Amino acid sequence: MDQTHASSPLAGAVHDLATEVVLALRSGDHLATVCGAAGIDEENRTGIAAARVIGADLLLPSVLYGRHPHPGDVAVLDRAVREFPPKPDAPAATAWSHWHMISTLQRFAPPPQGATGPGTAVGTGTTVGTGTTVGTGTTGTYAEPDAAWLENAPWQSFTHQLSVLAPLAVPAAPSAVQRAAADRAVDLARGFVRAVRRRDWLQAAGAGRWLAAIGGEPATLGLERGLDFVELMGGHDPRVTLHVRAARLMAEARAR
Image (cartoon, rainbow, N blue to C red; front, side, top):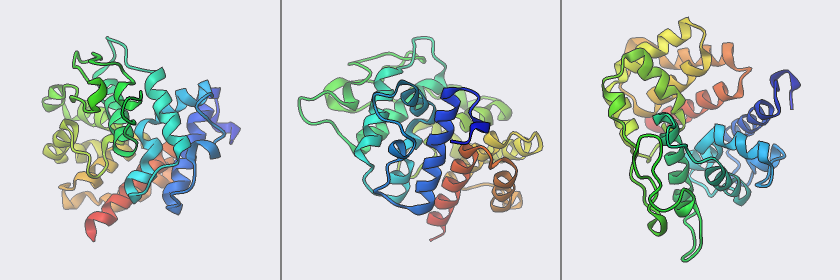
């Protein structure tokens, strides 16, 4: 681990996990274990907290390459879901991140019949930050949290919230957040430019990832070159590189 990026044990673990996700995205190796390579297992409390920060992107290589994730990575993400459920007053973005983690787990590893798993991780009928019920127990299906707050948000805060929810910007994962992003691609493009000008590389990378996922950005934006610049300037943060790499892979897939 590069100690220059580890201001705390949690920050160091987040840095290591994000770095391993980036390496897996670059290699496409579906046998690689992101958590194992970072020295994290489901009994590592700091590592579990870091997995909660990374969210469903822990399994992003499997999502983008269409391959089965390593069981150890699934176990860590599942533990993060169970250990860090949203509090009743949690922000809406936290509720959405949690929902997406559960949905991603369910996508790859539905629990065996009669066993506890992602479908029961938040409890049957658990209510989270937005006041929306997201858990249904044995069925393994989930109601989406509320996204109406995104529809009329100013473009600046809209871009900020979407960048926080960048892990939801993946193919074949429709959601109200994704629909809101598609409806406001021009606002996201404005937010991308603003983030670059403010040197907020993580927000720019998240916004760019959404634009690559949904398309529809103005042709004058120059998204590809913009992402190159974001990675050049902010690539010391592996979370920036993660979003940029994801954006490139999705853009390549859309171009085929």
